[in-house]
Amino acid sequence: MIGRRVKEIRMQKKLSLSQLAESAEIAKSYLSNIERDICINPTIDVVEKLAKALKVHPAVLLNWEIKELGSGMDDSFNCIKSHISTLDSLQLKELRDSIDIVVWKREKVPLSDLGNLI
Picture 1 (cartoon, rainbow, N blue to C red):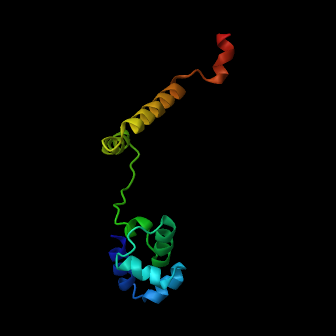
Picture 2: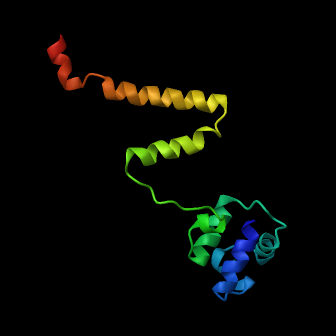
Picture 3: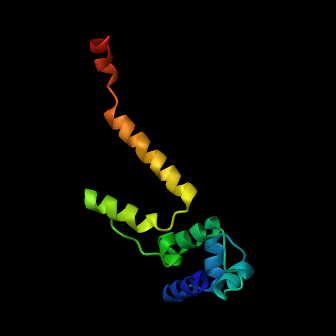
């Protein structure tokens, strides 16, 4: 839960609840509810405000793993492969359509060569 992470980081940085609420420009009572997991789904705007006030990346508050992006084909393929099983049939069709567009763009005749074909 985000509340536990917010409180943990706030305590590490030796900030009071009031100090963090003021710095993040959110109500102290709302921050308290977040930290006590009464409010378990704060908006992304609130997450970003808290992250900025705590000087951390929002992913840290959400306890998401931040991975370094590689530039190789294997990295791209592994990224796609890791997400493909979570897609529903409509999303898979959208992915297929996107791939078709990329392939079409790669294979189409450049405009500069059209004069030679006419």
